[in-house]
Length: 261
Image (cartoon, rainbow, N blue to C red):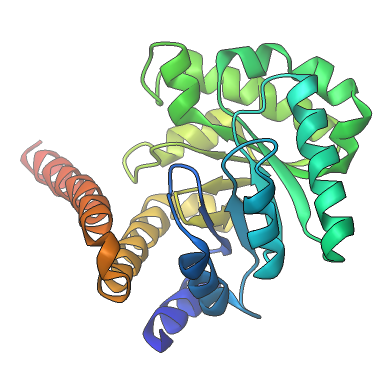
């Protein structure tokens, strides 16, 4: 664990990493794994955990027990879903006498179309950040995450959210090869991979492909550690490592192609 903390410290110092993140949803982590990430990030970076749904009460209790900094709800598509998330979270926090900031994911065409209504809702005031999940957003539009229409929809959402006074992040299949295009179009406050949150500023933008690459390398090492620490989840973490390795291979192929040109 000390090695991971050192690498995370280096990312914070040199790559503008502003947070560590995980979840019980697609990340499929249990309380023991969340507790591990809390220990890795403790007093170093805030930890965000994406829960299983707007009213995932047990997930919220786990987050509060582990003193997670931000609880993030996925697939919030309507004012009603936003209301359910905020009211449920407030109720659980009162019961547990614990606090965490609240955030949501916008990750579908439907959610973006209902964004104006959500911003106008009093429940939107309870949020600290909104993340645009390009992976699911692009899937709902039957396009790729880097498609111009997906990026423009994300950019429009970011502008509206910023105007409402909330921080924004954009994620979804971020790659060193395409990160500059995402930054140029979307202009969010942060960008995120599956487990890291990067602060966007002029210095980050200047070397964004390098920083995203370093972030993916950290995630591979994180999975390597988790694979050994939680042997019952070995198959899951091996699969995640292979997915990152495919990105590394693509980076290598792109570099070779550039050299030939």
